[in-house]
Image 1 (cartoon, helix red, strand yellow):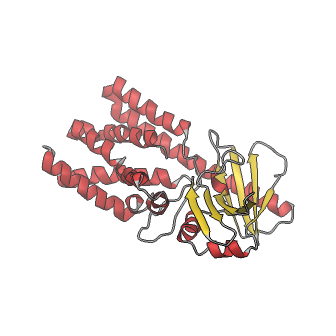
Image 2 (tube, rainbow, N blue to C red):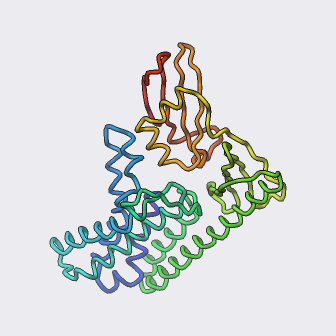
Image 3 (cartoon, helix red, strand yellow):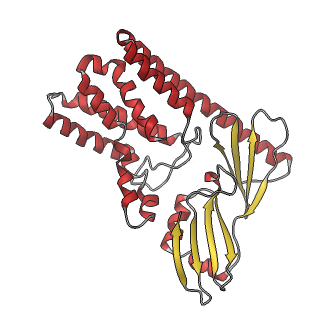
Length: 310
């Protein structure tokens, strides 16, 4: 989820009764706590861009890491403020941190909630930027500030709406996946797994992805459209000795772990080099635009000339 949404959840949580009981310090605790899992953003400053892929949404976004962050933040508050109720501060902190982790889990990026397990989990319910969800929090913050004597009722109602909205997104995700499964079966296509990936701004717009033997199918569709789905298909693998050699590269193994529906594209260059591009279809919000694009240039002698990610 985007940083603005995460931050807005802090004052909303604090006004549900915590700041009324423990004062403005509770608001500060919440506002920092809901941002703490993204402390791994410092990885973006690393010289190696692959560091971000490996560690973002890792330890700091796990249940264990969240508890550690809550303990550290609670100790800081206890040491440097007048709020000496350590258990209360820890409770406030872990609520904020775990809400952050949940809001990330409902997106499609992948979160290692059970770290040190390296398995990445995604619910694929909500696009990573959702103006409707953010608006619910904005309304909660504004109304609780304008009507302070009703702030508890307003913010609890806001959290109820937030939960209902996310739950509704989960229901639409199930409907979207069922539509993909039906479309494949109607066209006689067998599959091992399918995923419905949320698209921006609406519960009705989705991208369907399915994996069959050696092929990945992709369809963009609206739940409001009664027509059968039209699938594009991509070859999952290409038979090429040079490609098989680059599969042993650490960067490629990392990308394989990071991605869900990776596609490999082989592009001969004018100078005789070969450009291999790895991209994950689940990130293709705009057709033919590929975030997290891994590019490997192989020289004529089979030597790796460059490995970059964009």
